[in-house]
Length: 214
Image 1: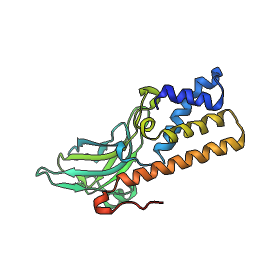
Image 2: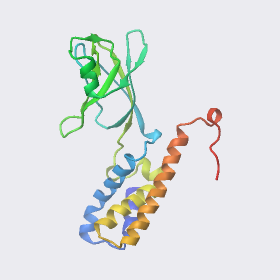
Image 3: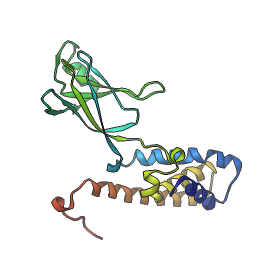
Image 4: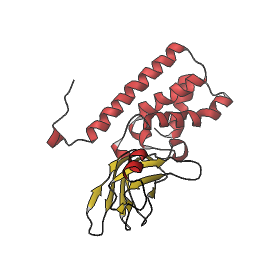
């Protein structure tokens, strides 16, 4: 399902092409995408990114499209990986109260979030004593189907995207409570199916066995 098909389906389901409603359709779609992406971690929507630490600097910039972390590793000059343990900022500050406590980083924390001018930073500790490669494996926010016309959700999670958008749109229209409830139930069913798919794609059927059938 591409964006044009989604828009047409939305208007057909709700039987309206009123100007104000049509104007807000991109908002409804983005709201639905946001709900889905923050409800299910989809393995296909993961990326690897590399950057580097700066000597005597505790802060490492985050990617602009990062949604959540899968793993964060430091790679030393010999190519050895050290996977950092996620902690709260308060833990890092207490364990390493001075920036002069340097060494190979062992821990990281989300220091600040994305805003209009900055994608945010990780805080690592101890403070890097050298320039190390950082390898980040993360879940990312893909471009919206509104701007790209197609998307992973549109191609692989059509029901979740459609019913999620219907919930947002029909709520805006202050529609019948029973029908909103129905759309929401269908959305939850589709989301559960998507969650099951995400779980299966994280497993190896040969080593973990086939999932049980109903």
